[in-house]
Length: 141
Image (cartoon, rainbow, N blue to C red; front, side, top):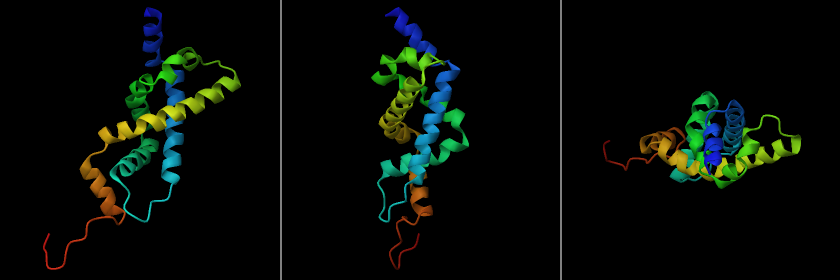
């Protein structure tokens, strides 16, 4: 068990892990931002993920650092920790790891976005994208 803890702690510091995770986050962000904005008002969870996806390309190192622990909470990462720490995996292993990183991101991003984006930021997004609540006639703001 101690060896596992040492390996897991290495996950937080290894450049190869940061590179893989950064690429995964950028790819996830690209997929999310490529989605068309719905014609009906999207739910807050969708908006929060969209906001995070729009931010990631502007500061990928920040989001890579802030999400490392989310990756460690997933059993896929901990089960395959040696492959994640290895900078010299063969091509099939790297392809499998990339798919795993994507799956882990899709799984944790709703939780991350829920804590990263405020209700005020969601409302600003709604207002900026034509989903603000219109005032009733005769009422003042």
